[in-house]
Amino acid sequence: MISRLIEGRASSEIVASTVDTPVREVIALLAERRIGAVPILENGRVAGIFSERDVIYRLAAEGDACLDRPVGEVMTSPAITVDPRTTVLDALALMTRRRIRHLPVVDGEAMCGFISIGDLVKARLDQIQHEAEAMREYIQTA
Image (cartoon, rainbow, N blue to C red; front, side, top):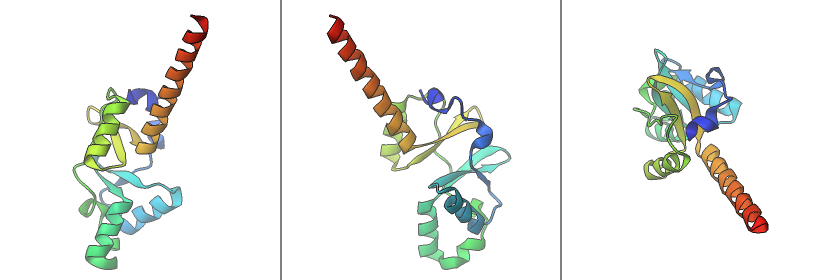
């Protein structure tokens, strides 16, 4: 479950921005934090996501004029989200199907986490390793 991935992470530690922040500032945030995307909030709710891909698409389409626009005008919206009860495999399938790399975790209307495909792959590998170890133990004691 996604809830296990985000437990221990404070929602206050999620790097996010608001719809009225200039694109230039959000790009600086991505670079400073060395991250690929941030959820964009409006009135405390997830309104969209802004990613490296959004930067590239907007620069290609509009040039540097897009840098002073509010991120809410250029973000990917609506955001595709998951519930904390979503399984890791279901989240991976969603990301693969929709060709995305980040998902806000939303419980009701409140964002309680933000996960990347890297988080999910690591969790899946850990699970496979745990299952393999359990199988080895079982075989040795049988």
